[in-house]
Structure formats: C-alpha cells, structure tokens
Length: 180
Image 1: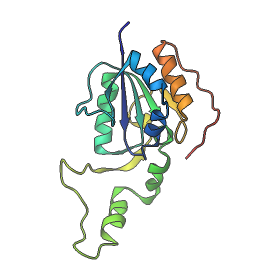
Image 2 (image 1 turned 90 degrees about the vertical axis):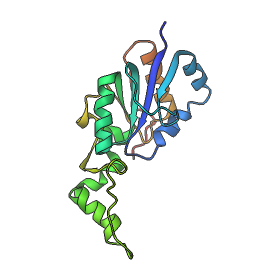
Image 3 (image 1 turned 180 degrees about the horizontal axis):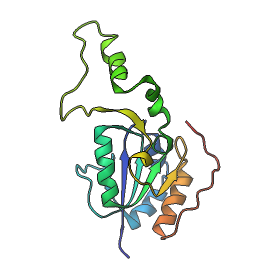
Image 4 (image 1 turned 180 degrees about the vertical axis):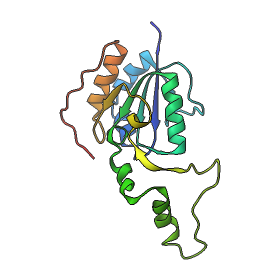
C-alpha cells in the first residue's frame, strides 16, 4: 500500500488548528506509519509538491500569496480540507471585511498611530498585498471537506484522517465543537 502524502497549510489564522493537530499526541506515531507529511509549517519544505493526497488548510485567504498558493494546492492535491472555522467561514480574520477593503485597514494600522515616518509596508516579494476582502477557502478554490471548530478538537481531526486513510468519506458529526 502506498504511503499517504499529507500536507497542512497555515493561511490567515492563529495556528490553533495546527496546535489541535499536535494534540493528536500518540496517534501521530500511528499516522507516521502510514503517511508522510510532505508540506507543513512544522516541516522545512519550501515548495508545495505535486501529487499530495490530503491537504488540511487552516486560516482564511487574506492576501495575494494565500490566493496563489490555494490555487496551486488545489491543482496538486486530491482531497482538500477546510481546516477550522477561519478556513470554513473566514471567522476572526474576516472581521476586517466591513471596514471597506485593505487600504483602510492598513491606514489604521500603520499610518494613523504613527509618530515617526508613517508608511505602509509594501516591499514587493516580501510583504504580500492584502486582498480587499478576506475569503473562506471555498470562495477561492473548490473544497472537498469542511472540518469546523475553533479549533477542531483532536478526535475530529483523527476521525477525518482515519476515514481518508481507509479510503472512505468522513462522517463528521457536530459534537463538542466550539466556534470562534
């Protein structure tokens, strides 16, 4: 049996979903017997690989780099999972949407309170431009499964991964969830 190629990605969010993933504790050793983590914030891989079986994306699509990577991930991944409330709904990251786009947010954060040399960070290739509207993942690319929760509890993450490893569709029941 071929080993599962697993990826996790962190967009606009707090990393709580990845912390919950690490809360899988000893089950991570069982996961390591059947899967290789080929891309993740916890792995030093610079380029998203081809032929990924499952990718969990945490966070909302908030900047141009997120949008470009989401599109690349969708092309290179068989099963894409919106991982946590920010990826599912936009959640806290999308609270800036009613403020009218990226410009008012940047102005308020970098210009209004500045006492010395006010400037908006905009180094091309270093600071990705904010999108005018933060999006949940499914508004940027097609998503196969939604794993809600803020963060999703480790047993739900495990249930999803076990089903996918076994080649069956996950049956996600809304129990013991907290929403952000």
